[in-house]
Length: 295
Image 1 (tube, rainbow, N blue to C red):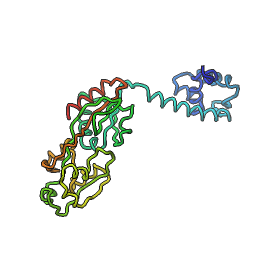
Image 2: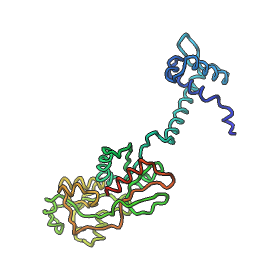
Image 3: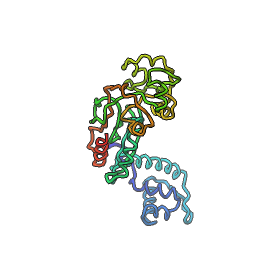
Image 4: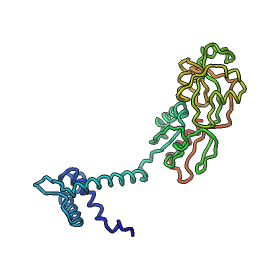
């Protein structure tokens, strides 16, 4: 047995002491803990006897902490907070919350509308969504479902393909017409973004893989993110590279026009993954099946 286990008082006395210290009143502490005032007083006396010091000075109904009491209260409160946080992390809630993480672009353009429909359906369950683009932030062990871009090679994770990636230049109809079907530059710009992973396709990669080298002469506007390139394209501010499965609504509504003859199949895809190390909850299984069925 570790030595500290033999030097600790009964742990319930610390819970009673922490409540009494906050309220500085045994009756109010008892109300919080759903016990009698006598039970609180007894536990505090037990702790004081164990320590060999007084923790409070009694002055009528008012409790005045001693120096020892104030010191112990600070440490006890902090310890109980850490313990509560740890227990909340590992405890399975009565109604599990599905923790889903997704790459930012897919979360914005494809996933969130699907989650909204799911939340309004008879299949609904509580869920939390995290969006990130760093692989380490996505593949955290606490996530139940992860949607990411790349290949189906994820050690420690099961994965199923949602859809393959196809990249195509997109813009408003006016911009596409003005640009002469993308063959001539008539004042238009290419909306580019900083690649955060080697398997992302920006304009340089697209030009290299399609062989449309004339686009190298076009002016480039660097944007803060892939999402911003699509936002600027929707405003008629240039031509972006769009992933076809992500822009279903924008393309079907006519807000953006895709040049289908310029489509590039990247060989990558968007996958939904889940940890191998633990069983999937019924709620996570239900959400996974809904997302796979809508891809």
